[in-house]
Length: 291
Image 1 (cartoon, one colour):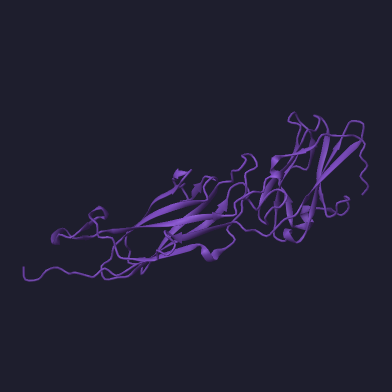
Image 2 (image 1 turned 30 degrees about the vertical axis):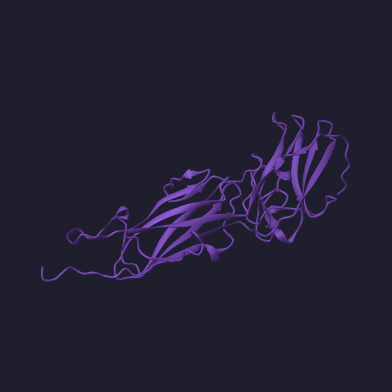
């Protein structure tokens, strides 16, 4: 394909292409599994435009998303420039995209029939977005049951209660995508926490709070999903479990449904999705006899 430039257009990429900081998934270096917005500014209203991808910088080797399978256009690729003077679309990068380099083109055509072209080089990479669960502090993996009155422990014989133990877990994000609309900020992220207890004695266990520095105390939605402000790299999950005299209890926080907003990235490492804390055996004291 020969690309002859007949007219000059002021075509500027959105800030998404200039931000990589903490983020490892960006418009020009997207993770497999991520979705990014691609747009060109400064086009005159009324111009016809086309967006397309080739596998060569000279414009040859046109790639179709329906047959290539490594990316999907999620919006129109042909249209007329409106009053916003932009031409753009969303692209989802699929498995296998990291094996290749792509060239995204915009072609703008005026009423004269003359066209101009610009392209950007896109190099997808393997996903590295990850949410991990760990104890607070990390080496705090075993403890005695709490026996404070503030935790419900009651020692008086007739009113005895074994109480409950509170624990804290940290959920930390690694390699979040930078938000191109807010310099230095990242997209929000979410997860669905589950508590597992072994042995399962049917004890009361509950998540008390999920809290982040910028997010504050987060309220779960109807699916028990907690969405965290993108400015937070971690949140603290506080849980409580009923004590069980005579048993060691292993309480685990399991992360499920991990996802980053906007890019739709999911967790890439299942090996750190669970953190476990063992509450050591509380001696069993039965009722007093002979009284």
